[in-house]
Amino acid sequence: MKYAEKIILGTVQLGIPYGINNHTGKPDRLTAHKLLQTAWDGGICLLDTAESYGNAQEIIGDYHSAQSNRFNVITKLQYSKDPDGLLQSVLNDLELLKVDTLYGFMFHHLDLFKRNPKNLKDLIRLKNDGKIQRIGVSVYTNEDIEFILNYPEINLIQMPYNMLDNWYQRGEYVRLAKDNGIEIHVRSVFLQGLFFKPLSDLPPKLRPLRTYLRQLQELCCHYQMTMEMGAMAYALGRPEFDRVLMGVDTPEQLSGNLNQINQLSLTDEFLKSVDAIQVADTELLSPVNW
Image: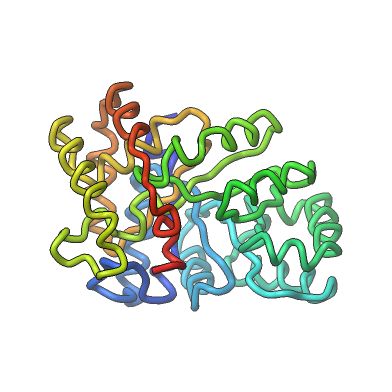
């Protein structure tokens, strides 16, 4: 698989303004379609969306209606629903997205999965009916991953992973998930754009990360990579990860990233250098704490 084909395009930015370093806001319809077309032309065939991403699902469906191209799509359940509500929700998602089956349907967080055990049975039924291909959970902590291992019906997880929330923080649990046959997708590889923010512009709460960010800048400079490519290389270089989620703000940004990704030359030395970074203030690795 080429590196670009390993990428999932995140679509939250199609439905709502998103990201600490996003200065362009939500794109208009034509720009959104251009972004999706750029992804398709670049070899990306899988999209990540959710019911809570504004009208992102509708925009994807609008693109599908206007094109012969059909992306594979993962979407997520955001709120608690009774069984009948969940079944109808999946059918509504399929209609909005203009697809016949979902690559994956995920609980947006583990607590939602815990509060709705009956929903898992309905998702199994939908999987057996061919409406969804994989049942997943979006996890946030290592403890979340450990909990999911008790449910063999869950065969997909999406987890945070990046140059600071790295192999030192996550490696042991990634191995456990792979040993249990779980497909692993990683998100937050740019830490919501934090890697691109000037160190002088860091808000007070994030200033404890300044030393680590400077260290990453120096590493990427040494290996002649931009921070964007360093972040992508670090995630793409791990064979344990099946897919890497990438979010962008504009078609031009996506095109530039894909061009650089296709030219990546990964080295074990770079990966090991990033692995060695050990962030002490681990609560700052989760954007929900910002």
